[in-house]
Length: 188
Image (cartoon, rainbow, N blue to C red):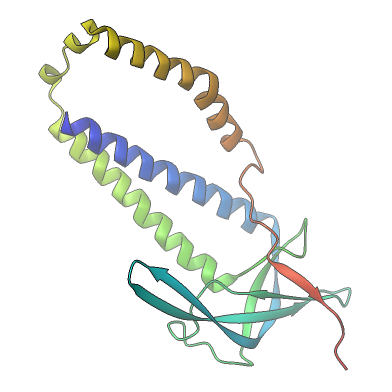
């Protein structure tokens, strides 16, 4: 029975890696690079149970060819990435909406995380395949009316809700980044 848990967890990690990579690749294919500059550093505090972690995040401003300027808060820590106020950075800007932007450096870090997720997924599936014993699955439990009913309801849900959800996630443009930059006016 443990093998199914490993396989399911591995497939879940692989699905997250696949969807994340698909979203990243779509954004990268539909974006262009512009020069940006760190104009401010803001603190972001995150609490987890009794501990508090503070991150210093860069506020990046970038200009488009038409003269409009946008500003957004980056997703990477200034201290860990050795960024400084006034430092130039590369910004990926969506061709469809110039108010959607990401730091190019942050995008590369996300690829590493997605590769780790894919590796964990493959490892989980491999351990599950190694532990799999067909003798453990003789389907005797299906003679129990409750288990049979719960299995039927689960399959019905998968057919009516799960498969359409998977097809929606697979569609082009389904997973997109959200607007994160605001247009700033000309400053005197």
